[in-house]
Amino acid sequence: MTDPTLTYQNKRFMEILEENYGKKNGKKAKKAKRSVLEQKVELKKVNPNKMVQAKPKTKPKTLQIVVPQKKKIVTAGPRAVCHDVYDYLQKTALVMAPEKDVHLGAVGQINLNDAGSEKQITADISYNSFMLFSHLACLMNQGTVFYQGTPGASKTSIAKLVAHHIYGISLDNIEKATIKGHEGISDTDMLAMLDIGLLIKEGKEVPHARPFVKSMVRIIDEVNRLGPQQRNMLYSIASDGEVEYRGKTFRAPQGPLFATANYADAGNSELEVPFLDRLDVQIEASSLNPWYIQLFKGRKNKNLRKELENIGKKPRPLSVDDFNQARYEINNIKFSEEAMSKLAYFIAEINYCYMARKDVSKKKKGLASRLKPGNSLCSKC
Image 1 (cartoon, rainbow, N blue to C red):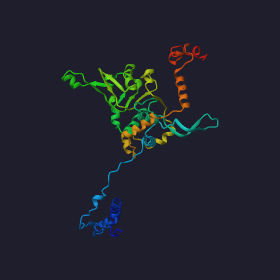
Image 2: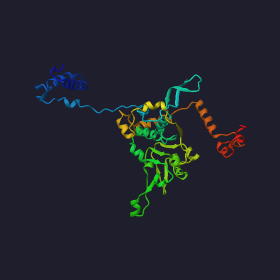
Image 3: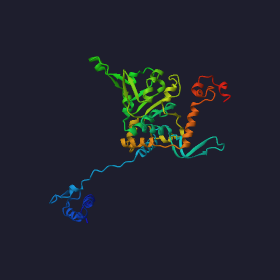
Image 4: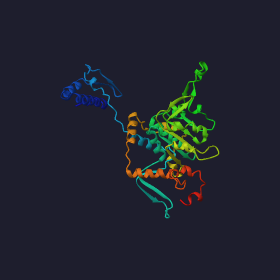
């Protein structure tokens, strides 16, 4: 029993000493407890507002035993962390594209009017494709995502925010590694540059990679504002994660590449098929649904970094072990025979054209694009 004259804090301290010491020493715990209690701190009342602690007669021998031991912190795995990031960005209303257009499990629909012309899809599990594929690209070794849509639909913001939380890289560093698309940009601006100091002093051409190449997260903002020649320089880093500059090859670290583009206007150009072929997923960004305005009520601060600071506890980034586990699980996903058959059919549909040529080996949509479209090509299909 502890002394009733002790304050609550001192009582609890004595209990902790007894509990910890007792657990470590088994049968000898009772004797040790008595020793601690006999040597407990005594308090003298000087006045009602001030308490003075009297020195113990002898130094307790058990204090060094109850120092907390370092324990390995057990944290959630990559799936839980990714879900935390997804929920965090969604609930804090930092993402301006809250539509959930990827549905899993039992999918149904609710008619919103009597005619059935407007419907709401329901599902066991629903995700927003922007955030879902951004997460998956971060988990893969060289994931690539292409966002296209209207201005202000959070295409670039989603890429930056997801990468910031998954990798723990600061928004400033992600911004520095982002290529801003315009026709006047060169390979020196995007990929690498010569060491000017060595060039002037010793006449040596020593190239150094730009932040875009060195960063784990690479973003090309408004890629369709680059000219065809500039995009041609990005083919190798989009497909292989490598770039060559002045005879030296730079290998980019494993990580995602995100490219964004607004819809066609006078200031941009159509993307070439070889460039699009190097991107894993293309996502269409629609304009913000006005029904979601309530989600952003009170979020008047346009400074993204400041807004992040004002929000409550944020999820932790993924560790090296998390990435290894996630990639192991991804690489070991097994597909059923039915799924593989549907995938083969889908690939055939996007590559095959019955009317392209008489030769079976040439019945490809790439060849069909060279023929005159319309009834002359498609009427007999």
